[in-house]
Amino acid sequence: MIELVKNPDAQILATARRVLATEAAALKMLADNIPLEFERAVEAMRNAPGRIIVTGIGKSGHIGRKISSTLSSTGTPSFFLHAAEASHGDLGMITPDDVCVMLSNSGETAELRDILAYVRRFEIPLIAISARSNSALMRAADFKLLLPDAPEACSNGLAPTTSTTLMLALGDALAIALMEARGFAVENFRQLHPGGRLGAQMSRVADLMHGNEELPLVQLDENMAETLLAMTSRGFGMAIVVEPERGRLAGVVTDGDLRRNMAGLMDRTAGEIATRAPASVKPDTLAAEALALMNRRAISVLPVVDDAGLPVGVLHVHDLLRAGVA
Image (cartoon, rainbow, N blue to C red; front, side):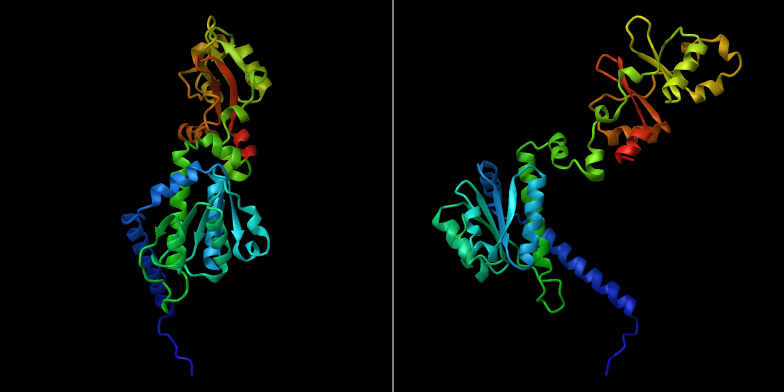
């Protein structure tokens, strides 16, 4: 006979909170007790002339794939080696220049034995991530990253939950520590993430702006007939006003400026109605930063200037939309 739960929704939420609290407590324990050989492991990976080979089986294997992917996307060449395939010829993918990261909660996983024997035979540096300090894996490792003794979040204490969360977090810590140690910057990140929204947000203004030949330029003393022509012919709804002598950005004339100065408009000059000291960006500004500036100022067009203040381009919000930034 099935026993009905009086308030199933409450029980479900209570289970969710218990699982999250259990895993959060374990992560806090790991953060407060970083494995003693963590720094040495990062240095070994940093100094490796080859790649970082990550391996594991089952749930640890799934985590290993993600760790390897994170390493690769943050500038450290890496790939995941399936433990079963390794025993059937793929051991040849590991070279003496590589570093091997092996994941096993128990440290006694049978499927890892062939890889373990191989890396020991050829003296390939081995980083072990395990929860058992006296396991075969940890005894054989050059760098032992011991996970804290924390209970699984599974009510039966059997399903890998807390242990895999800890492995994943420790793998992230390794990858980010290595990334920062190598000085991996935004420019490098963009090279490895050219696609999708993330790649678009890391584009520079110079990649998206309209160049010199499309600039709607007028001088401070330009009459309004020529100013309106510049605004309409370029299609940006704006004229960039520059100093007569040095050509530096002095202001912009927008549709709003025209509406605010309708009385006697055609008898005035661009400089007389322009918005002075307008918002602008440099060509090397991140596209996402340019979008944030547009949102703060409630504007749709930005002049792009070089270090000397000379206009070199113009960026429209539509350019950001087409690129997938906005």
